[in-house]
Structure formats: C-alpha cells, structure tokens
Image (cartoon, rainbow, N blue to C red; front, side, top):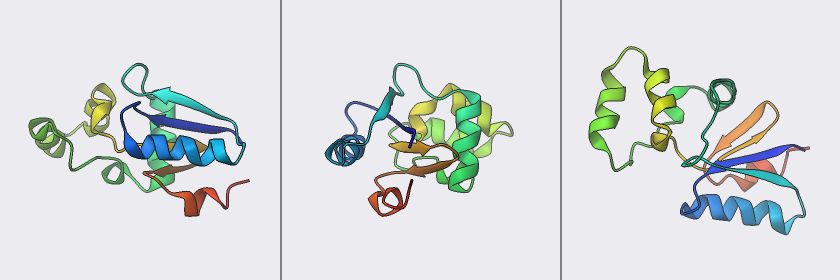
Length: 111
C-alpha cells in the first residue's frame, strides 16, 4: 500500500485517519494542505476516484462567498486548485483509489 493523507493538522477527521493507519502499522505520508496542497495530477486522480468535483467540495466551509463563486464560475477546477481549503478533508489515497472523509470501511478492503 502507498497511502497518502491530505488534510490539515487541526482537522479532527484527518487526525482520526492518521490514527487508523498508525494503529494498524501501515505507513502513510501526510500532506498538510495548508502548506503544500495537491498537484493538478493528484487533484484529477482524486476527482475521478470519488465521482467528481461536487463530491470534493466542503459545502460547510466558512467562506460562503468563495463557495458561491465556485458554484457559478465556468472553470471551477482552476479556482478550487487555487483555494484548496474548500476541499473536504481528509483525502486518503492508495494509488488510483481515494476516499474523502473518515472512511475506515473502505480502507479495510485496500491492499
């Protein structure tokens, strides 16, 4: 397994995801989205794995103006890549597979 966890240090679900893999002795790489974020390739891979852009956006994000802007602009992907704080966390990747949020029921089946 090649696990990557994209999230923030303050996100409760990101901490739970890290704990899940740590308790099972599974190595993972943590990427702090406030510092680095996802590349365009990683973004597209996750988007495809989770069923599209709409599933990635955190509708409860504090910046309602930014969410409204993203909803109505044509090039949504570019705006989201510039403002990755609107993406739900954690994003957990294992090769071509990915989940958004705390999803241990899915991670159990990963090899």
